[in-house]
Amino acid sequence: MRQPTQNELAYACRVTYTLVMLDTRFSQNCRRREFVRWIGELEMTHALTLNTDRVLSAKNLSAIFSLFCKKLDVMAHGRNLRGVPTEDRLLAIGFPENLRTNAHLHVAADLTFLQAPARTRPAGLYGLIHDAWLQSTNNTGSIYVGLHPDRGWFEYMTKHFTRTGGQFFLSVDYHPH
View 1 (cartoon, rainbow, N blue to C red):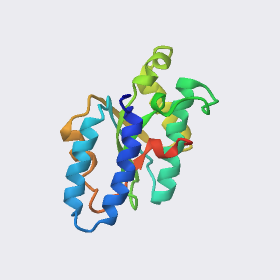
View 2 (cartoon, rainbow, N blue to C red):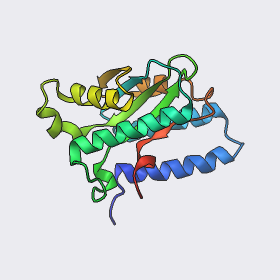
View 3 (cartoon, rainbow, N blue to C red):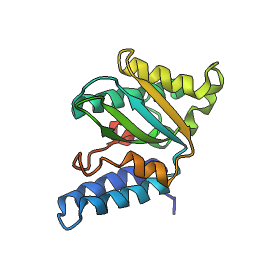
View 4 (cartoon, rainbow, N blue to C red):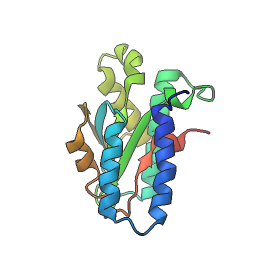
């Protein structure tokens, strides 16, 4: 039997999470702990903080994150993404924070698919991510890129999970299914 890919697991967890959110027996803190555990199982390669340097609604920040995900996929696979399987595209989960002051996302991402395109850039992977983020935010904002996120990063990125009502953005949600 074929093993599910990381993106398939992420999508299945998104569906499961939606069902759990409807069940009021689970506290927000319990959901957060499960998210930390689940993200740790996804073998993410990078920790990102994506700052917009402005006030945004969750809907607008989601649209920017969607565009950012698409730009990274295009950098790796070219403009036509229709034939690219989901498991070959970006896998990232982002948690919004401070929407009313300085909207930003804390993200765990698997960026292994960007290794070949990053070698062609003088600034490498950081340059690719920085360019994609600036293009997505109309040349505002800043980024932080860290390697090998661990449980400490997953707990940090979900610290406002209970305040935002459990809101998060999953790159797989932006892929055509």
